[in-house]
Length: 500
Image 1 (cartoon, one colour):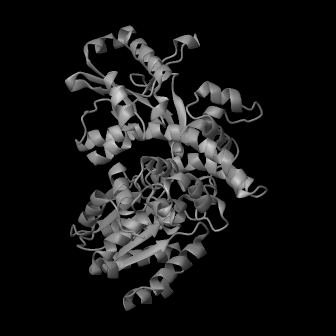
Image 2 (cartoon, helix red, strand yellow; image 1 turned 180 degrees about the horizontal axis):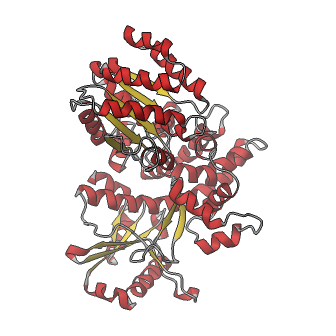
Image 3 (tube, helix red, strand yellow; image 1 turned 60 degrees about the vertical axis):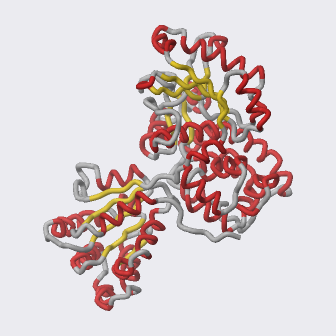
């Protein structure tokens, strides 16, 4: 079996190295969803430098109280390599002495890492921010040429409340920040090639569950999932990663995603998992409760803007107030957990695994259709950004739909991509299997493209060069030839793998 390696992250790693080696004290915020690899990235940076490794002090903040946080930091100091650092441990008894110790460490050229920093929004822990602010203000003006403080957090709203709210003690204090996002497709292809995961159906199944979250792929590696043949891959992914008693992700979503949420917010997520792409009216019709004092829209807004768990997507050319907005669960893993893995895990408590897997695999097929459409949109953005593809995007909101009074006049196009400088427009149809691009599907695609160009606001596009592109994970040679002869461009994941 191939070994696991450190994949991707070239640009973030270079940026962190620049911050650490800049010759001045720093206060850096690193933000990203859970399991995205924030701590791993810092660990890799430290391992690449013996000097930094010896100067790093790490603490994972517990979600508890002042005494426990101080004790945790004291324990981190007591386990340090330097005697001077270990000698500081006994002085840390509360938030005041903890902040003072961080200041002393920074002045000695050490680098302090506070992980799960968002917990300092809790009422029991928030006083620490004022103590830390007083020390940071002194450090910023001390003219230090070494040392620094990293704060790592996963909830954007809470990290922003700590560091961006003008009323917060630490507002305006950070000197650098880094947002760590998913692995992109190029990074994933490096993983797939090194682990000998060869088929687009496997790539899509993995992306549907794990998107670009490094920790989940490493968990899959440790479960020997990458050695499973294509025919059994989806079944074994569910079994090994979710359904066994020792499965590494069996409680992941409930533990890390949903523990902050209660009541209506959870109901909204469950509904979106079953009805991806529904609109506001459909959500209200299904979930509105006259006895709930908080309007449903408030819960939806919190999930969209506060937690970043739901995407509110507008069709191309529409504004933010359009009533055509559709809602989707943002995170692939959370969506797959609610729609596929959680129902299967609940079923295996009473049924044999095989009986639980049968409906789960059916649900997975439907989910992969939505995931593939999202993947194609992400690929267009990535390839255009890197200047590697054959289509330069000028419009990033990819897709079009309307909401007519008469359903017979509805228009639904999976992808509408604009290359305005070159007056090119690309219409795309995404199908999970190439055989689904049949005569009926193509005729419907053609009707919707023509209907899209008829309204007055879109008529200026009629003179543009049109591309009609069909997307599937994999096209056979015969299928590709037949569709190409009918005037369509065919693109599959093999094609994109060659571009990255």
